[in-house]
Image 1 (spheres, helix red, strand yellow):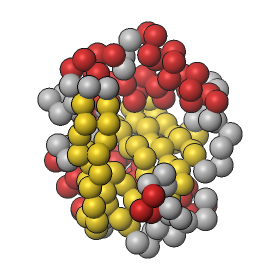
Image 2 (cartoon, one colour):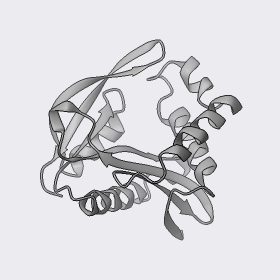
Image 3 (cartoon, helix red, strand yellow):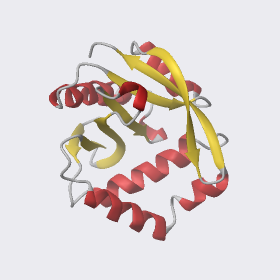
Length: 172
């Protein structure tokens, strides 16, 4: 499989939003309430997300990328300066999602390594990752990649509060 990682821009922002929505629907079925999973894929919510993301495109401490495999967008990741008060001066891998069709082909590790590079370029030497507690596969992935479980926090969605495990990567 041929792949390419490209930075989010005005030309691919709608692809980013669509991959994000589909990945959430595939990954979080049974973890996140169905009402939310249906909502994120409505035309109105996709358009709202596109507009929100367009406004943040030029922030050097908030970068997003898309994974293209065999000419199809199939994954995304987002890195930023941590917004968690307990980890103020480090980077955060805020999202890393793959569509089911490309899971278990090494692309998660490829995106994870690229995310670490981007966080280093932002000037950070450490990073955190938040992962919904119910997402066993992703939690195992972050442990396998060397993450140290350091805390948990609430993750709030409309009509639902979930627990998120926080993994620290001290040296990236």
